[in-house]
Image 1 (cartoon, one colour):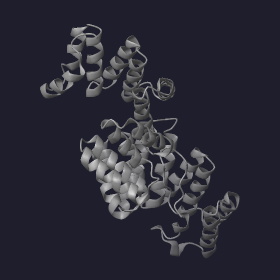
Image 2 (tube, helix red, strand yellow; image 1 turned 60 degrees about the horizontal axis):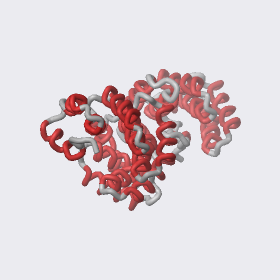
Image 3 (spheres, helix red, strand yellow; image 1 turned 30 degrees about the vertical axis):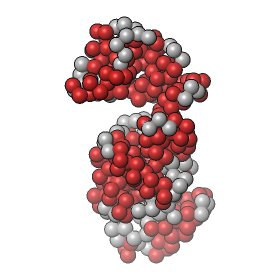
Image 4 (cartoon, helix red, strand yellow; image 1 turned 90 degrees about the vertical axis):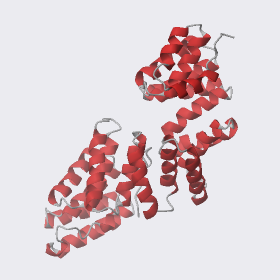
Length: 353
């Protein structure tokens, strides 16, 4: 059983029943301790947390240095949302047995959960996943969690490398295939991205991540209704739900659904006002309601946050030209390469309408 929890990260935990024979030397453990740990793992797999905890604690009474029992207690605490307790038990497990790959992987899950309130803990989560994989490259849960974390952090080259290996190990994981397609798209390979997304949807038509990629492709082709359908579904369930919501807000604005787009952007800004993509979406939404001043403010914010974001510079240049502010438009386009400036010109009207 792979235990999954309903978070945006789609984190995967280890199998509790497997925690019975690590490198710490199960043969030296009292048989009764092993029996209590085995019974506790069965309770944990069935969701009987009280019974599971009692058994794991009994195992530790017989053998306080039983790394697997500590790791399983960490899973119980995590299931209850007690992240500090989960961290303590899992850290004890890896202190007792530094080669305990499963415990390192689950410690990464705990640290990634903690990062929802303390983003700096993501560095620890990445370290934990990498440690698990250095011990056992076949740890698919750790590799999946690490690749998703990297993709959300826009480290697409690194995420893609892990996802390609994961695809060989778990070829029917449609969500992972969809995140791989997203990496291809963000790395400038739209044809490959659509092919990978199509394959992922063949594996599982209900998978959310490949819908994000297909929705983005549909939007680029001008199929706004099809894009809205895909992006709305990806926004609800995808590990990349934030990205889907940003693109969905833009598509809704382009469809003339200004109130819906406004609501989406307000929620996104309340979650992270320092996200350049959100600011760019907010600028598009402001333009859809003919609020040029707000559109310029949001586009300028996007450029400040991400000076390398070409779409933000192009949109800011467009807004400035419409306002008759040619120096502003020139400054916006100046850092772009000559071919990028030339490509942007059709979207940048020379005269205000």
